[in-house]
Image (tube, rainbow, N blue to C red):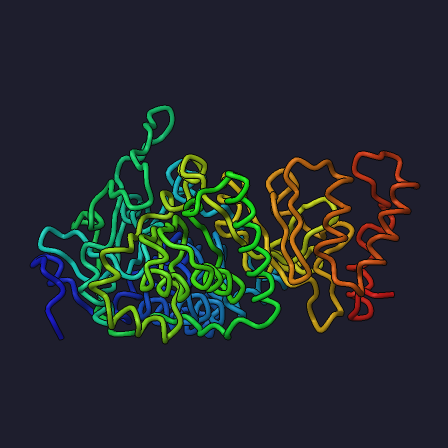
Length: 503
């Protein structure tokens, strides 16, 4: 293996993951690296989970509080959840075992806007941070860290934690050196100053994470890949959604509200997002930029084809094929990708000033444009709000995308009233399904209901929605946002009872 631990004092602290895990105590609050299955510690969490299982077998409690950038992978969230080792988790998750335990009420979960996590930690809202466990590509001679495939909240964890464990992952390419931009100019109120970032390709920080070597209690060497799943090819529904959105962009260009280069793009992760990115490629766009959270396969393609000139994010979320493509042409991508801390990638003031176009998925929308992006039937968390709220409230245009139905038509994604509100009607500009696009800008609630029913609802649910709205308009006490409160959530209740929203 190539030598990656270039600080003599820290080289003396190399040990096995099992030995490092012995340094972790029950009840600790731990900040861990990781954002969408990239850059998370891969060995120490599994060794910690083994300790937890052994403790539980002897009747001893062993749980910790886990803070990350966003979701991680089975080696972290999955291992600790199976070991019943997490007392509190924030701010985002996607592991099936972890999700099941949250929804059974066996552990606590805080679903938080991703831009808030670092500042809340600095404000002391989460209490003392006992330990940081952070993956790095290398340790530099001065003790600073060459970050790996995600940055997330690592700067904050390293700054605040009493103790630090570093995992040096030999799988992460040293050629990423120079791709990261770690900004150290943030401060607590009332001492904050404007962030000097004017364009997505501005570099305002440093290429490495600062680290006090005296905090480090262990260094663990690993050689393990990130764990991101492959995306299915965009289906016909995703392609139709993408087509509607691309047509909308062209309309906005014709109206003079957007330039041919649009504005910096923010895109959620998934098949629909990749379909939209593919539509931009096929639609002849060029000179675009991205100021977003994650670099996914579709963005690599846009960068390679000069549709995107630069992409700023905090992490990768690449399929195995995407990882192979990135590693195969890393010198090219290093000049066009910037990885920042998530307090910068998701910063509301920057999102508003740059004028980002926000494109995010959702679970359901209601007649008036309220969005549920996190819960099934109002009570069961799926993943979390992530960064969608940061961009939806502050972006130039906020777009929410979904197929009009789910579960083979048993569920309508356009409903009378959403069962959980993540994004209020005040933050939603555009709703898109494969049926069409509803431009909600400048419309009153009753006007919104008309275009959402006509443009976004599936034909099998459109008459049911129209019937509900007509009766609500007649029978609702208030006519500003008409609702029949005894029926507003009846579709969800019917689905829970029968498995189908239709009567």
